[in-house]
Image (cartoon, rainbow, N blue to C red; front, side):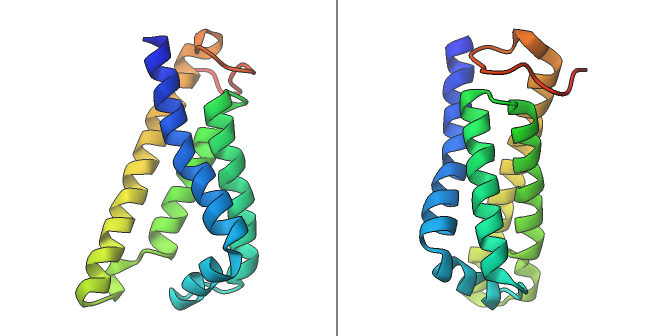
Length: 138
Protein backbone atom coordinates (compact mmCIF):
# COMPACT_ATOMS: atom_id res chain seq x y z
CA UNK A 1 0.00 0.00 0.00
CA UNK A 2 2.87 2.39 0.71
CA UNK A 3 4.04 2.08 -2.89
CA UNK A 4 0.55 2.94 -4.16
CA UNK A 5 0.51 6.02 -1.94
CA UNK A 6 3.86 7.06 -3.38
CA UNK A 7 2.62 6.52 -6.95
CA UNK A 8 -0.48 8.60 -6.16
CA UNK A 9 1.68 11.40 -4.73
CA UNK A 10 3.87 11.37 -7.83
CA UNK A 11 0.87 11.51 -10.16
CA UNK A 12 -0.76 14.28 -8.14
CA UNK A 13 2.43 16.33 -7.94
CA UNK A 14 3.35 15.94 -11.61
CA UNK A 15 0.45 18.03 -12.89
CA UNK A 16 1.65 20.95 -10.78
CA UNK A 17 5.32 20.52 -11.68
CA UNK A 18 4.44 20.26 -15.37
CA UNK A 19 2.15 23.29 -15.30
CA UNK A 20 4.56 25.27 -13.14
CA UNK A 21 7.58 24.72 -15.35
CA UNK A 22 5.96 24.28 -18.76
CA UNK A 23 3.08 26.71 -18.55
CA UNK A 24 4.11 29.31 -16.02
CA UNK A 25 7.90 29.55 -16.17
CA UNK A 26 8.71 28.57 -19.77
CA UNK A 27 5.62 30.00 -21.49
CA UNK A 28 5.26 32.95 -19.14
CA UNK A 29 4.08 35.46 -21.74
CA UNK A 30 1.47 33.11 -23.21
CA UNK A 31 0.12 32.16 -19.78
CA UNK A 32 0.11 35.80 -18.68
CA UNK A 33 -1.79 36.74 -21.84
CA UNK A 34 -4.44 34.16 -20.99
CA UNK A 35 -4.57 35.53 -17.44
CA UNK A 36 -5.02 39.06 -18.73
CA UNK A 37 -7.80 37.86 -21.03
CA UNK A 38 -9.48 36.38 -17.95
CA UNK A 39 -9.23 39.72 -16.10
CA UNK A 40 -6.11 39.26 -13.97
CA UNK A 41 -4.14 42.38 -13.06
CA UNK A 42 -0.32 42.06 -12.99
CA UNK A 43 -0.71 38.72 -14.75
CA UNK A 44 2.97 38.24 -15.64
CA UNK A 45 4.14 38.67 -12.05
CA UNK A 46 1.38 36.41 -10.75
CA UNK A 47 2.22 33.76 -13.34
CA UNK A 48 5.87 33.74 -12.29
CA UNK A 49 5.05 33.65 -8.57
CA UNK A 50 2.45 30.93 -9.00
CA UNK A 51 4.79 28.98 -11.29
CA UNK A 52 7.49 28.88 -8.63
CA UNK A 53 4.90 28.06 -5.96
CA UNK A 54 3.19 25.19 -7.74
CA UNK A 55 6.48 23.73 -8.91
CA UNK A 56 7.78 23.76 -5.34
CA UNK A 57 4.48 22.41 -4.03
CA UNK A 58 4.39 19.60 -6.58
CA UNK A 59 7.99 18.62 -5.79
CA UNK A 60 7.25 18.81 -2.06
CA UNK A 61 4.37 16.37 -2.44
CA UNK A 62 6.37 14.04 -4.68
CA UNK A 63 9.50 13.92 -2.51
CA UNK A 64 7.78 14.31 0.84
CA UNK A 65 9.51 17.54 1.77
CA UNK A 66 7.01 19.21 4.10
CA UNK A 67 4.42 17.36 2.04
CA UNK A 68 1.53 18.47 4.22
CA UNK A 69 2.36 22.14 3.76
CA UNK A 70 3.00 21.55 0.05
CA UNK A 71 -0.40 19.87 -0.35
CA UNK A 72 -2.12 22.71 1.52
CA UNK A 73 -0.40 25.26 -0.71
CA UNK A 74 -1.57 23.41 -3.80
CA UNK A 75 -5.12 23.40 -2.42
CA UNK A 76 -4.95 27.18 -2.00
CA UNK A 77 -3.56 27.65 -5.51
CA UNK A 78 -6.20 25.37 -7.05
CA UNK A 79 -9.06 27.26 -5.39
CA UNK A 80 -7.64 30.68 -6.25
CA UNK A 81 -7.11 29.66 -9.89
CA UNK A 82 -10.59 28.16 -10.09
CA UNK A 83 -12.34 31.33 -8.97
CA UNK A 84 -9.99 34.00 -10.34
CA UNK A 85 -9.23 32.49 -13.74
CA UNK A 86 -11.83 29.88 -14.62
CA UNK A 87 -14.97 31.89 -13.76
CA UNK A 88 -17.12 30.09 -16.33
CA UNK A 89 -20.32 31.77 -15.13
CA UNK A 90 -19.15 34.95 -16.90
CA UNK A 91 -18.72 33.18 -20.25
CA UNK A 92 -20.99 31.88 -22.99
CA UNK A 93 -20.94 29.08 -25.53
CA UNK A 94 -17.95 26.82 -25.98
CA UNK A 95 -15.71 29.03 -23.82
CA UNK A 96 -18.12 28.52 -20.93
CA UNK A 97 -17.92 24.75 -21.38
CA UNK A 98 -14.11 24.78 -21.48
CA UNK A 99 -13.80 27.09 -18.48
CA UNK A 100 -16.32 25.04 -16.50
CA UNK A 101 -14.22 21.93 -17.15
CA UNK A 102 -11.10 23.77 -15.97
CA UNK A 103 -12.96 25.08 -12.91
CA UNK A 104 -14.15 21.59 -11.99
CA UNK A 105 -10.64 20.17 -12.57
CA UNK A 106 -9.23 22.72 -10.16
CA UNK A 107 -11.91 21.92 -7.58
CA UNK A 108 -11.13 18.21 -7.83
CA UNK A 109 -7.41 18.91 -7.47
CA UNK A 110 -8.17 20.97 -4.37
CA UNK A 111 -10.19 18.06 -3.00
CA UNK A 112 -7.38 15.61 -3.67
CA UNK A 113 -4.94 17.96 -1.98
CA UNK A 114 -7.16 18.22 1.09
CA UNK A 115 -7.37 14.44 1.33
CA UNK A 116 -3.59 14.20 1.01
CA UNK A 117 -3.06 16.93 3.62
CA UNK A 118 -5.29 15.17 6.17
CA UNK A 119 -3.70 11.80 5.47
CA UNK A 120 -0.19 13.17 5.96
CA UNK A 121 -1.13 15.08 9.11
CA UNK A 122 -2.90 12.06 10.62
CA UNK A 123 -0.09 9.60 9.87
CA UNK A 124 2.62 12.02 10.97
CA UNK A 125 6.08 10.46 10.99
CA UNK A 126 4.52 7.17 9.82
CA UNK A 127 3.72 8.69 6.42
CA UNK A 128 5.91 6.64 4.04
CA UNK A 129 8.73 7.70 1.73
CA UNK A 130 9.23 11.28 2.91
CA UNK A 131 12.30 13.46 3.36
CA UNK A 132 10.83 15.34 6.33
CA UNK A 133 8.18 14.77 8.95
CA UNK A 134 4.96 16.73 8.46
CA UNK A 135 4.56 20.15 10.01
CA UNK A 136 0.92 19.69 10.99
CA UNK A 137 -0.10 16.84 13.29
CA UNK A 138 -3.65 15.77 14.13
